View 1 (cartoon, one colour):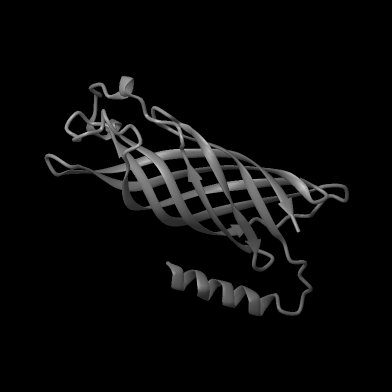
View 2: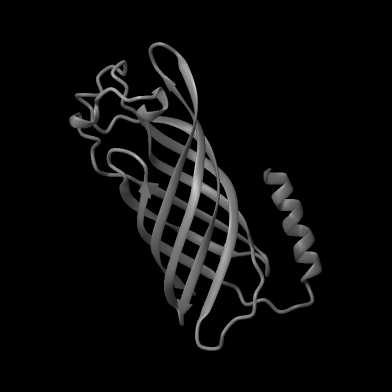
Length: 192
């Protein structure tokens, strides 16, 4: 996937080489929501426009609130025990071209990518979770989604939605489950 992204970037750069491009780098920080017993967290990162239609977002999110012992109850399905908690990601994306208004600017990107994630397993079979309410397991996940920016001058707002896909596995017994969990975020941006 990374090779395909590099090839696409090279082809688009070659096609747009004659046109002047204003560089756009945006820092973003805000709040995110991921389904689970402590769903709210923080997110931050940097988004850069590589060409007129290709951009890349590097970022992270964290859920610093403990899960809580009250959430260690029996669930209807084994997949309900897994909760996405933290992540570091790379998200290349394609910008939907559009005319820009004079007084403000907006962008819309369709993105897919992946990263390192940390998820909690709140099943009753997980040893020691009641004592360690921040316990997480590292893994690799992928996602697809979209984000939109609205900017006045150098400052603005970014809204994003994505669906994370990863594999969770109960420690005892070994029982892998393919999981899909949504994530939404609202962030402030500064562009320079």
